[in-house]
Amino acid sequence: MAQVLEFKLPDLGEGLTEAEIVRWLVEVGDVVAIDQPVVEVETAKAMVEVPCPYGGVVTARFGEEGTELPVGAPLLTVAVGATEGSSGSDPESTGVSGNVLVGYGTGAPAARRRRIRPDRLDRAVTEAPVSGAPVVEAPVVEAPRVEAPVVKVLVAEASVSEGPVPVVSPLVRRLARQHDIDLRRLAGSGPDGLILRADVDRAIRTAEETATATARAAQAPVQAQVPAAAPNGVATAGDAERIPLRGVRGAVADKLSRSRTEIPDATCWVDADATELMAVRAAMNAATGPSAGPKVSVLALLARICTAALARFPELNSTVDTEAREIVRLSGVHLGFAAQTERGLVVPVVRDAHTRNAESIGAEIARLTELARTGKLSPAQLTGGTFTLNNYGVFGVDGSTPIINHPEAAMLGVGRIMPKPWVHQGELAVRQVVQLSLTFDHRVCDGGTAGGFLRYVADCVEQPAVLLRTV
Picture 1 (tube, rainbow, N blue to C red):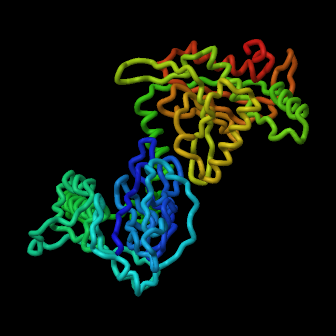
Picture 2 (picture 1 turned 90 degrees about the vertical axis):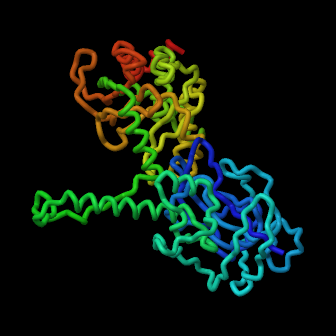
């Protein structure tokens, strides 16, 4: 006998409350093993493969690729004990994982995908309940391909059901209450008419669109409206592209907006002669030899300078507790660095940077950068920073006024290093010049402290020996 278990989107950690379905790894009719990854989702911080704690046959999937689901929403249903020829003791078909699905699951290797023939899937599921799990009758699958869910609209007044509302998720009920949606007027798109989050969202959008259209009609003047025209005279109404702010892009937008709203920031900048720093880097790399591993990067040297500067000016390695009205100075430096990827801007964090030398910082930056490019950074590797280093010089620009990475108190920006006329030892010469900019939270310090920090960084760039005197 087989019993249907519902697997819901688990808590992914780090305070994340929702995720977007990027790619399904299984289809209806596939046989899955315990803790086998079944779907790839994108949170605001990372790409995650979600493992299923049940072993059996996939009988339904909830949500198409590109759909956002809240934590606790149904992902799929699995008929436990439904594999053909199972004796009931095969963990691939009858087992349930004992692991807590928080974060990335157990990381067990994925089993070979098998599929129940569509004409036998209906016989693989019974209505026997399982303690603690809702029972969902699996639909008869006519083909391996999964069709998009049927879009259903609000039921007419005369057909309002008098029986129990087919809703399992408390999140769906709460969402409906918050928006005054009568669940008895909805036709669910789930198995046996189960009302899903998508059904309530659709009803909310319909109600909002109706209200908006009514308001516009009431406010519209009698004369015909002429579409707004661009400067070249071409009407643009309806031609604009709308791009959802979600995933990494949405998280960045929220964080930058919060930073601008909450932090009274100020920026100071200075030009520095980086000729000696470049010479020191070349000498360090030449001394290590070609087989000594990765070369020391300019970013690694600047990161090491930052940790030394923060030791002298700890005010900038802090955060503000707005509720307690306190400045919290942090003992350790967890250095974030901005990295541009195909998925958008991310800020990996080098833990305990104050305990590392330039080579160690450089190696960790290289490792985290590679993970960022492949989309494999975990949420923990993108959080907890206390100070950020932003090298926008790689984009070929000289200066910028960076936005602080909330809830940090400061960010150092570095422009491109390029040959420029410079007065050196009383004579005009061509030197390698870089612009450094510091954006800081004016609540944690005044301009004197910020200027002292930036001047110390510039002095170390111009004369790296200054750093040796402070080690």
